[in-house]
Length: 359
Image 1 (cartoon, rainbow, N blue to C red):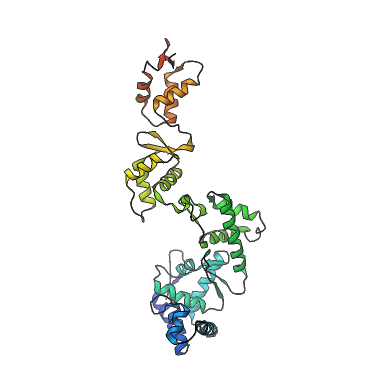
Image 2 (image 1 turned 135 degrees about the vertical axis):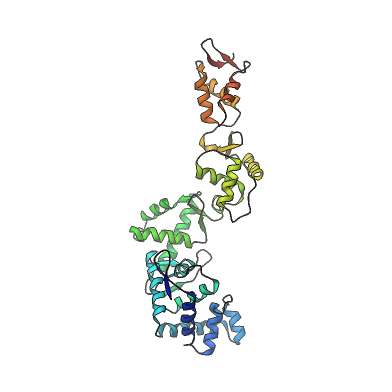
C-alpha cells in the first residue's frame, strides 16, 4: 500500500512494488519477460548489458534492444492497477515540482523511503512502463533524468547544462548559486530560468552534472578543483576557516574537519597543524591559533608587529593604543604585549608614559 512520508507525500511499500512488477511482467511472453528481468535487475542482481543478455539467448545485442523496446510498448498499453497509477501520479508531481525534469536517483528516492537496490531497479522498470514519462539516458557529463512525454525540455536541459559548465569553468573560482542563476536569467536562456521554476531548474541542472559540484560553503565549481573536491587537510582547513569567519586553534579546526567530513579518514591535529604551517594562505595569529592571510592578519611576532606599527607613527603613543592595535591583529594575551613593550633596547618610554621607538 501507499503510506505518507515525512513530506506528506505518498510513498509506495515494498510489497506493492513486488505485486505491480509481477503483474506487469506476467503480461509478457516468456523470453521478453526474462530479458526485461535481466535488463533491469528485477531478480535482485545488477542490471545486465545488452551484449551479455544477447549471448545468453544466442541473439544479437540489437535484437535484445528491439525486444526491450517492443516489450515496453506493450507494457505502456496494458491496463494498469490503481497502485501503479498512484505511483506515476507521484512521479509526475515530483517532476513538475522540480521544473519539468528530475534526476533519476532523486526521483526514485522520492517514491520510496530507504530504497534498496532491488527497489530502485523495480521503480526504473515501472517508470519505463508508463505512457506519461520519458527517460533521457545519462552521459559522461550529466546523469540521466526523467521528464514528461511530449515535452522537449530534455533538449533544453542538455544544451543549458553545457552552457552552465562553460560559464563556471571560465570564472576559475567557485560561484554561489544565486550568482549563476542571475547570470543565466540575464542571458539568452532567460525564459528557461524565469520565475520560481527557474530556480528549481538551475538547481536540478547543477545537481545532475557530473562535471561540477559544491563544497561545504555551497559554492559551485569544477569537480577537479581542490576547493570543490575538498581533498586533503589544507583544503578542508581553508574551508573550515572561511565557514566560521574567525581564527581557530588548530585542534578546533581538526574537530570541525572530522565533523564535516566524518565519512572520510579522521584527521589528526598534528597533521592539520603541519599543513597550516606549510601553506601561505594561513597565518598564525596566536598560540596555535590560525586565521586566513587575506583577513589582514600580519605575519610575525608581537615584537615585530609593534616595531612595524611604531615605525609609521610620528608621535609617541599611549600603551593602551599599542595594546589594542596588537590585540586586533593577533590573538595573544594583553600581558604579552606589555612585557614586549618593556624591552628598553627597542622601545623608549617617555616621561608621560607613552611609547616610541628607541633612537
